[in-house]
Length: 571
DNA sequence: GCCGTTTTCGGCCCGACTGTTTTCAGTCG
Image (cartoon, rainbow, N blue to C red):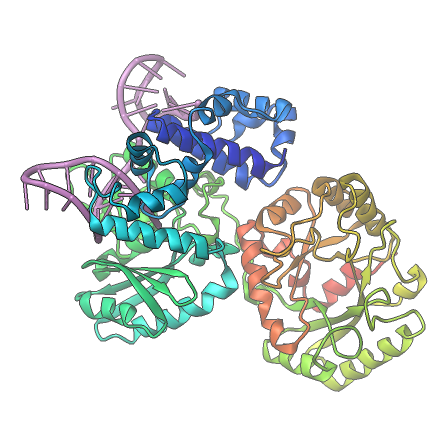
């Protein structure tokens, strides 16, 4: 059973408890545990084997027993008991916006409505409206929400939401009287996917700011609008929430709306222990006296903590680290001095010339750039016979670039199903940088895939393991393998693991980065650009690394050229 | 069900908005 499966069962128990009138605190405990398991960087089964489950925050003795039972038998008795009482369609109704546990339970108990389709029918024939506290507006809202549920796919990748958010932000900042405006929410935390766009503005008069949002050109629907808060739906289906606050509360609000929710709860719980109340307007003592809130720093300082970067705010140990003064000095985009995985049109599937790539890299301030076209197994890939010419071409382009940037010779070589590389080691040994990647036979059993990757790592010629898990957001799951075994082999062989910064890859993931660090393995944050304009994608990889707690010293291509060349030198 | 420089029992984050009400329950983030 994978972490996601365990998390799903626990989270379903929480929903089932809500629907059957169980304790809200019990359901919260299950939901919290589900979240913890879902975010674990290692298999939950391994923590169980080592007896370390209860070391996780929010997992106590009882929950650990439940998880153990689930891992051993694949079934959780509590889940089975509750789900026997609740038809699956009832559970599904919770996914409709505006339908919480109370409303779903009411429809189910009073109207015997047990599926979304039946709920829709009950809305249309007036039965739902006749229930207590229901009315025509709620019915219309629910029908619209059912439509949206059917239309939408789920979460939106960061790179799709970011441009829309930046455009709206610019619009808000242009409004007279807006003193500050920022993106908040999971977008500011740079999660790889986001649920909706959260925007925040400081202004004495909120009305014109709200109008700027609701009147934006790509707004399809206004979901709600009050004096301090509005929600709209964009043409593409993305939801945008905007809050407007007085400037003296901006820091408190930015903290609050950046989340994560789990981080906020942890902060406020800490506040309660210190006799303080934290909300989106500031921090207050027990007499209601306001102690601060203009900046995030003031909020953290009030509860005795230094400012915590948004990427760390996931309740994954950042409060404890902040308290001990051991927060990482996170890697920044400017720390990344070069790019170690780039394709040119000289061969393979790149579409920019060496000169175009070098010019764009120079513009971005990169000091070095490895040209790593595909090897012979990919269409148009470089063969052993073509390799000398490829090297000469890169060296010629390097001479022409006069060190701005320095071009490194390289290849992205295929790892064949048996773990050998698709060009001879002697040929690859002539290159500055060898990235080795799995591009085929994704469905090998986990054991074989792990051995395959480890064999490539131990070849003696590989510098970086490219896009280690093979996952593509919303398109392809990671192939099955044992990341910890791969990391152990990589540490022994001095091989780095890639953080592929293509925004639909982001592979390693954030938790993978954190695991790499704990295993003493460096990462290479690389663009995998196939077009000069994609060299700028590196920022997505940097954000992923930051979410994985990585510092400059954890990143291979944060090294200056001379040190990098020493690190790449093979015996 | 979790958790503890108030506690191993008795708490458990906090406020805005909506639609239904004439004071508030439910939902959301």
